[in-house]
Length: 508
Image (cartoon, rainbow, N blue to C red; front, top):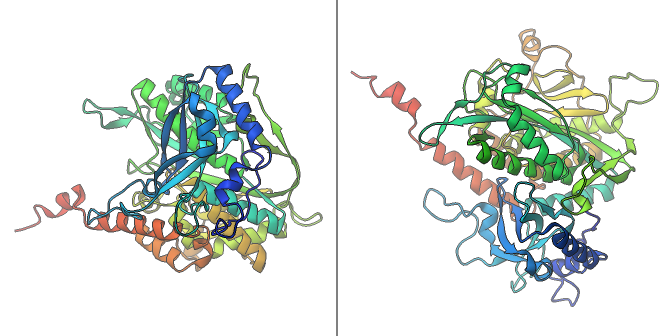
């Protein structure tokens, strides 16, 4: 996890019992006071004047408040307060009622995760720090307890519990495809900057000023950028960064999106993370490459930077140790060991419910329906096989493919940990890997289940799956179901251009 704090088990009503609340224990954790002082030194060294205190909503939005830097010590320990509904985007449902929390709800307390403090390279007067969210100190029930609608905080606790149970750390990397779109005179999208030519260096070169700016900012904020290419949709790039501990990878994907949004402003473009803005070409995915590790160490990577823009936690990576997905010595070098196979078994067992997290919008399913672009439509797995939900990219990791560019990374990582835990606990067998193109295998008689093919169907599968629901503890599942079910119903109740084109002049 980011930093070195070990989170205590939730104390719920501990304040009534005379012990520390979760909030108090977090603020008073060993070593934190010293790191608060180190941030002050970094603020003074870098000349930071203003700080964004940010956390992540249930749909992946970055929300929070800005505070002048001279209030750092007070805010580091007291936090900021926002209404609980900020975790649900303060969104309204079809009846114009606030989703999740009403106006009578209390205000959450967001306490900085001090190790994530980092200056923004595009405006060095400003820094950001991620926060952990808690219930209000004055709540009648569970005051100061961890706020269960905090998806980032949930991942910290779920991963900690997984490590304590299995002695294994989830490390994963992601492949964040997205599209750079031009703006029309009205400010709306007007097609991609480049042509849809996959791996074409000339098209990649056309976006060189853009991606070099993204890489510059990313490296400054601790992302170890490793490779990139032009993909096969208009303006579509994939820029990869090094895999790491699950929480740090999620933080870096969120930071990467924030960086792309800023670069888009600088070049008067649109950084599009919508999965399927164009039909007839590939959608934007965000494949996750996952493995479980035992042991290892953390190192600080400076990438040759003359000055770090923040705390070392931003530049920390997990290195070494034992990759438990490795094949068993003397057996097939293509087959993962028992740990890897059980984890694959857990994912296959819960793939339907996982789809509600990895393919989280109505638009996500345009990617699955637009056939012919290697979309992962079937609940199967195989070596280098891109027609299933899981691809064994190498014996030491597998690629989870039923996930797109709009993924909410903290929810996805939490859900994968729960699927892994179930696979390991029950020693689930994933069956034989499929060597053939699944479409051809089905023509030959293979029986294979499809993934859910709409958001509504995926939510139904999630509603039936208590294991994946447990990745959304406390209030989180209720909020996610309420938010996403309303999104699905609003889509069904909307008249679109398709309706007009097909039915406006169908009679007489």
